[in-house]
Structure formats: C-alpha cells, structure tokens
Image (cartoon, rainbow, N blue to C red):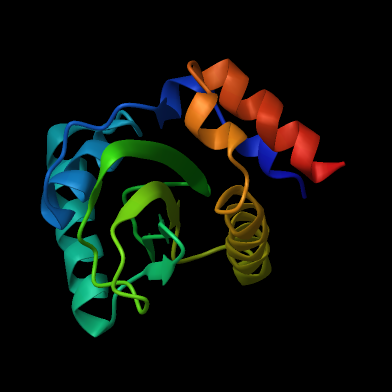
Length: 150
C-alpha cells in the first residue's frame, strides 16, 4: 500500500493554526469532514488515546491514531505547523508534522497496521527531508510523498 494512494488534498492542511495538542487534534479531525457529533466523539477518543501515551514519535513528527465507529474505512489527514506544537514527544521537541490515522474497529485489522507502518516509514524520511518545509500546496505534498515512495 502506498501512502500517496490514500491521501486526499482536502485532508491536508499545511498551515495549522493550532497552538496546543487539543487544538491540533480538533483541526486534524475537521479535515476528515465528519458530522459535528462524529467530530466530537473522535476528538474525545484521540484525547483518551493520548492519555495512554503520546503519539509524538520524535524528530518533529506525531502520528495520532485510533479506531472509531465514526468512520467506515481508514482515513488519513495530514497537518503541518510552522511554529511547532508541544506534543510530549519522547525527544522533548516540538512537533511540526502530524499524520492522523482513523480506522473502523471492525474489518481487516491488518489494513490499519499497514497504514500505520506506511505512515511511520514516510514520516521518518520526511523528518529529515528539508523539502517538506518548502511544500506550499496539498498536491505538492502528495507529489513529495510519491517521490519518497520510489
């Protein structure tokens, strides 16, 4: 599975306005374009997941993820913060790049894990790639993902 194939331009925000972890999660969830009750439920689920342990992975990247009944298939949203957000990452550094993954609790459990692994692999590369700071549009972001997938 390729990340470029599951990303959608409408689910990519390259200038997040959020200043806190909660605000980042809310902004990322809005990109999924769910109903208001579904968004509220999903944010609560993600916050509960963060209580178990931060999804900040270090090197300026976080991968908040959960399973929820509010979605019927795996969805991915991406956000970039120019100022960085404190996200309790293991390295203590601010997070600039966020990949939100939400999957239904039923269905193929392997798909969720494959997407999580694919995102983690891409994030690891992007954390060291200076081009990520120069990307201006969601389509340019997807193009960059395609280039690193080669």
